[in-house]
Length: 115
Image (cartoon, rainbow, N blue to C red; front, side, top):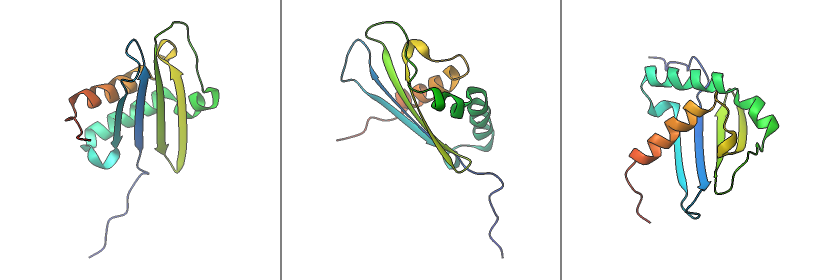
């Protein structure tokens, strides 16, 4: 019996949101392709494609107007490459917004960690 070979490289994404009106409140979320159902993994791949993370990482950090804004740090490992995007909450591009919102929802629905 042979072990199946992965058809496509896997992805791993982490998001860290800091700042805002209540400094010190940090929101963290991550997901790995192997944790997802195939349909959801395909949806996240489409979000990554739409966001064009490599291009955003090349322009990072992205600043925007406004005090007390959230600051996001997004790390993506995909296709044997790693990219990090640092971005002000007021500067999140429309193409990246659905991915950020997905990760924020995951963080809010995760059980609290004990520590």
